[in-house]
Amino acid sequence: MAVSSYIGRFAPSPTGPLHKGSLLAALASFLDARANGGQWLLRIDDLDPPREIPGAADRILRQLDEHGLHWDGPVLYQSTRLPAYKEALQQLSCAGLLYACYCNRARLRTLGGRYDGKCRIHNLHASATIHDKPHATRIQLPEQSTVTFKDVIQGPLLFDLNKAGDFILWRRDQLSAYQLACSLDDDHQGISHVIRGSDLLDSTPRQIHLSHCLALETPQYGHIPVLSNAEGQKLSKQNHAPELSSDKTTSNLIDCLGLLGFSIPSELSNSSNQQLLNWAIDHWQLSNVPVLRRVTESDSP
Image (cartoon, rainbow, N blue to C red; front, side, top):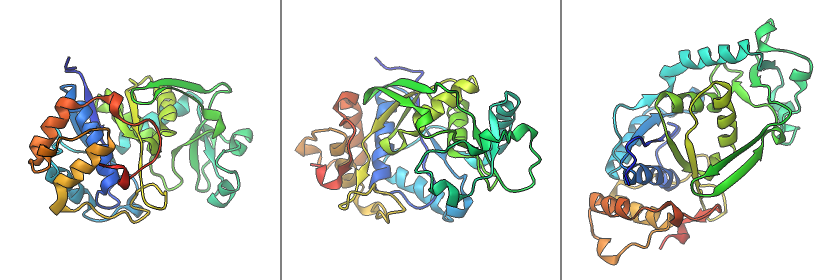
């Protein structure tokens, strides 16, 4: 039965054009929304100006359109939401949950991926500190910080947030960190379901915790396997993943559908993108999506 209250989204960063890995994530989110009779929104994660490439956001929009992935309503650009992020930060600060972190990148690299709470130990709370030098702002986690949720694709999952320690909400360069912006914008847009790559799985329990701290609605989450290259690296712009070809949109969709567990009838090989997507919407089942592992392009039929 169609769920009219379903609202999904795709939120790429404008650090370059879409590649097949990003198309895979967009397609999974799009199909789940459309199969449930819901809306599919587009949000541009333009909160990291040093990494953004001029024209990339417009190119991403054109690529989605070329592949038949048409979104609902206006595009939301996160750069327009800075006042909301600052307001939420102030709310958390007033609740005594934040502190300023003066640790530089060189020190953080020595910690092996877990922040040791040095600045929290010294009681450098953001709400009471004279900010005389650059700093990031972290959220203080409770001693018991276990987060459980049911991933709609992978099943029940459990995370201990303290394994990685207090995380950053506001960056040293005075920009919102991903966790804060994403949590607030999902709530702002009324997102009910987040279908995305498993490379963001570690972010999910952090966003759930943050949503609870801010009394926000928490979406349902589902994570698909990420696409990797021949060397086993996640297919990404940083790893020089090739741009999607505008001349191969149908084959791009067919490849991605195969990676999402579809068995595509041979007669659809010469269909239009819209016909292919209509068929995929009619046959979409979350239970067919592979459980977590990295898939490669060679895995597609």
